[in-house]
Length: 397
Image 1 (cartoon, rainbow, N blue to C red):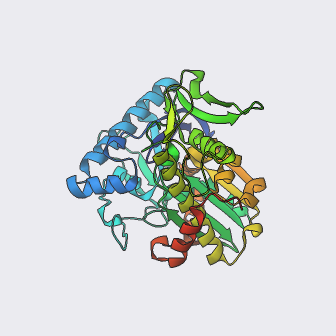
Image 2: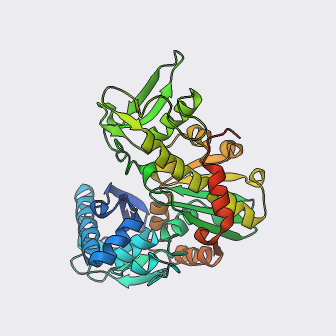
Image 3: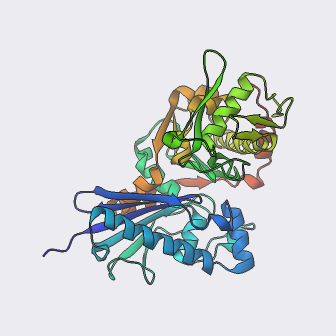
């Protein structure tokens, strides 16, 4: 009996891990598994995970994510009724810290300037022990651009078709980290913003991931009543990032939050009798949106172009695909002038990993994308700090 030719494509996010089991010859996805990154109890963002590694070493976090991947592979194979030992090809797209941890490298040097890495990947490495796949399988890691713009972004640019885009375009991946790429005249201007995990519901008092019971969208009806939907259409347990964004946009519209970000007349806004957001939650969203909005302005500055020159705003990642773009523009996450050209793309990192899982041509294209990238370190640029202060307000522009 002929052995099947299977592959695994994995997107390891700081908050969420997604895995595709793929039939290599046809490219068909046989099963998809996703779940919360098992490292989350050790820190909501990459900075806190690096801090954990400084204090305790990286080995525990490596073991945790490797065990999770192994379990997900077994689950995917059970769903598709396939044998794990038929898996010959694996590709991983992740931010640079997650790539280090899954590869077994320490990320501690990325925590302090000059933010150096052990590897920038773009290479194929042996599997680790106990991975339930073919013993001859190898793992391809998509190439990283810097310590804070990783292989998830190069994979995302590949999947989004940015190689073929000739007019100015922005790729924005909003997750636990905020990565922004502006392509102009063949150069990819890249930066990473310290947006924090607020957009994914972390470190928000009643925040939660986009899971059943999360308030995911909030509206104001014709009677000016606040209504909402929950994932799974069940009783709300909390609110996820897209619901937070909608709520803030409505609070700005009704004047319950002023242009400085102050929640007026109360310290909590109740969405129903059990779920609320606090003034502190709003402040965290404000800091996150200001970081991303300022990052966009820095890239426009370096590329020497204006907001109106941008012809496409590609929104990637789980949160970027799920949020209401009108709400995002209302709070100033990106310029309102870009709202008509905003396009949601879904999990581009996972798609890029799937494209590269066994294709040498796709891996060459990923390397070329990396070569065309110009990384801009925002922490060393006074212009970013100026723009960050400007973008802290909720003034309509």
